[in-house]
Amino acid sequence: MERQSYNQDMPYENPLYFAEEAAQLDLIADGRVALGVSRGSPEPALRGWESFGYTGSEDPRGADIAREHFEKFMRAIKGEPMTYADPVQYGAGAKLAIEPQSPGLAERIWWGAGSAKTAEWAGERGVNLMSSTLLTEANEGSFAEQQAEQLRRYREAFRAAGHTRTPRTSVSRSVFPIVGPEDEIFSYMGARESRDQVGVIDGFTSVFGRTYADSPDTLVEQLKQDQAVMESDTLMLTIPSQLGPELNLRILENFAKYVAPELGWQPNTEGPVTGYEIS
Image 1: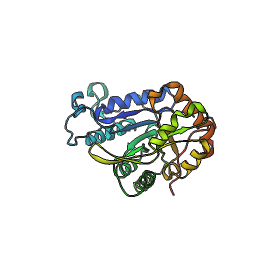
Image 2: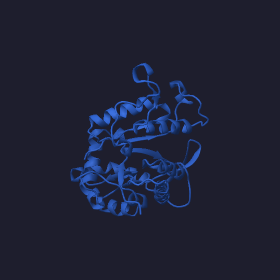
Image 3: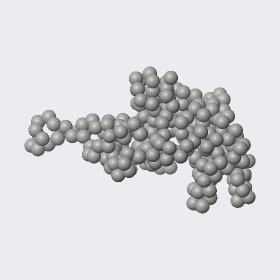
Image 4: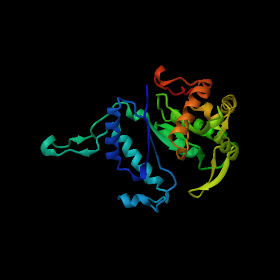
C-alpha cells in the first residue's frame, strides 16, 4: 500500500480547519495518508504564529501552543463533537463534529520529536513517532544510541498509557550509496559529516546525526550497526533538494536497489507497512 506524508508546523495551524483538510485528503487518497506534524523547525520569525492570530503562548518556541493545537486536532479527527449545533436546526443541546470524517486516520498521525521527553509525550497520546537527524539534547553516547533510547522510552510510554494497537516509528538518515563514478560527488558529503556533530539550535545543545556515504556493502554494515535504524520500523532518507531531481532520484534508486533489501525492506506492493509489536 502506497502512503503519502507531509509535515505541518502546528503553531501556525487552525486545528479544526487542518483536521477537515487532512480528512478530505485521506478520503481522496483512499486511506493512504501518513501525516507528520510537529512543533516545527527553528523559528525564523519572532513569534510568527501571532501574526496568524494565535496568541497566548508562553514558550518562545511556541511548543505550548503547538501541543494545544495538536490535542484539539486529534480530538477532531477522532470524531469528537467540537461545537454546539444551531438549536433551531438540530434541537437543544446537539453538537457537531468536523466534516468529513476519515475512519482510521487518527492511527496514521505521526508526531516529530527531538527529545526523549517529547517522545514520551507522543507515546502517551498514542500517535506514531518520527525522529529526525537531530536531537535537541546532548546526552552520553552516540547520536544513534541516544535516538534508540528515545524510541524505547516512547514505546514504554505508549504501553503504560494503555494503548493496545501496534504503533509506528521512524528515523531519518542522510544516506548516499556510491555505485558508479557519477556518485563520487557524495563521497565529499560523507567525508565532511562522517561523525556526529554537536551544535546549538533553539538555544539547546543539540546532536546532529552523521552522514552515510559509501559503497552499498559498506552502507549495509554501517546501518546495521546504527541502533536507532534497527530499533525503528521505518527509515526515511533525508535528501538535499539543491542537488536537483535527477541526482535525488538516483539516490533513491540506488538505495532501493542495493541497500534497502539487505536491511529487510520490501516494496509496498508486498502489502502495508506495519510496526514492531511492543513486548
